[in-house]
Amino acid sequence: MDDLCHVVCTSRLDCVRLVAGIFLDVSFCEELRGELLKHRKYVPVFERMVRSRDVVTQQLCLQTLEMIALTSSELLTVHPSFIPALLFSVLRTSDLQVKTIAGKLLLYFAENPKTIGELLDSEVDLKCALSSFVMSQDSILQCIASKILYSVVLSDREMLYDAGVMELVGTLRNNALDQQAWVLSDKIILMKNN
Image (tube, rainbow, N blue to C red; front, side, top):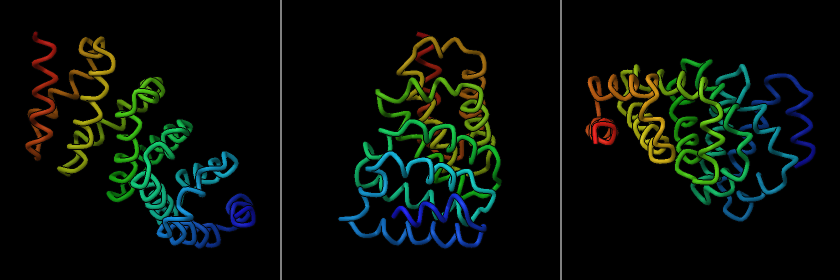
């Protein structure tokens, strides 16, 4: 594992892509999946791959993190340092798969009472990422945005009075392609009006 991490930090893009694929393969083995993030020293390696300029590397790494989170979201959320890397990947890519998986991973942080505060600390990037989800013509991204916004508002009621957040919620409700996204955005508006 240490050798693979060294490759990510020192090698060419094609080698890093290969290592990202190896990590994804390892994540399919239930006994080994948890080991990928158990040691804190490997977390920066995954963050580096999430921030990669190579979309394939990003996809493979995000899929690996998703497999880990599906086993135990705590294995992911115990590392809130992933939040800036995930937001970075959402904001700098046009790749739908990268945005979708990164959004799903951000949702784990939004739904966890221990990490929602750290997600809110990334306010500017979070609003920009959510805006890209809301304005997309993708129902899954809109649904992810509605769930994150709902978690944010439940966690911090003052966000109901944040003009930027409420503008996103209103835009989402008016343009939702998914019923669940519309319902959650409507609930947020009703919370503010009550």
